[in-house]
Length: 188
Image 1 (tube, one colour):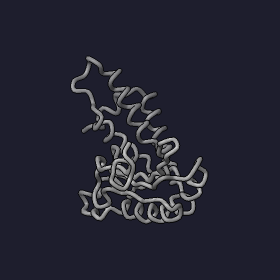
Image 2 (cartoon, rainbow, N blue to C red):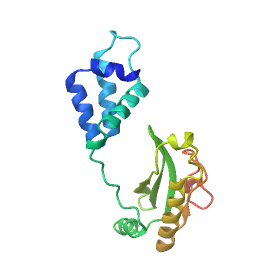
Image 3 (cartoon, rainbow, N blue to C red):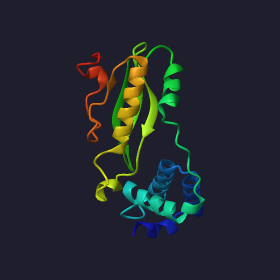
Image 4 (cartoon, rainbow, N blue to C red):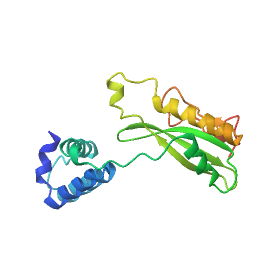
């Protein structure tokens, strides 16, 4: 089992990993562990634990420490709060866009304000409704994060009089065409 080498790590590394877990910083905990096993077992232990093994151990630490973890509150994703973010931008948005992205725990939707001057995008919200374990439990599709992004994105676009673009609302696709490269957007 991957967790069997947890005890072989120096106490300082285990404490640092647990510190990140207790502050709900999963990616930092995985990175600390991966860096430690690379350094500690370089040329000594084969095979060394890989990224996925480190991820499994960190998830086991989340389970072991579950009652003590201080979860980070979700930033507000209601239309009023997101409209206030857009209102603070320098200039009017050219579009509101939703795009799929993913990380080690699964898929999520990024809601973005697209600006023309200068050409850029501003992160408004990350919408995630669980890990990809949902796929194995038969809980998706439909993807609730996509439905939330469509509702919020449509409302924001209407409020600011700009188009809303979501090229792949029915399934995760991080290669779907972006607004600037779509027929309703601007090339570039």
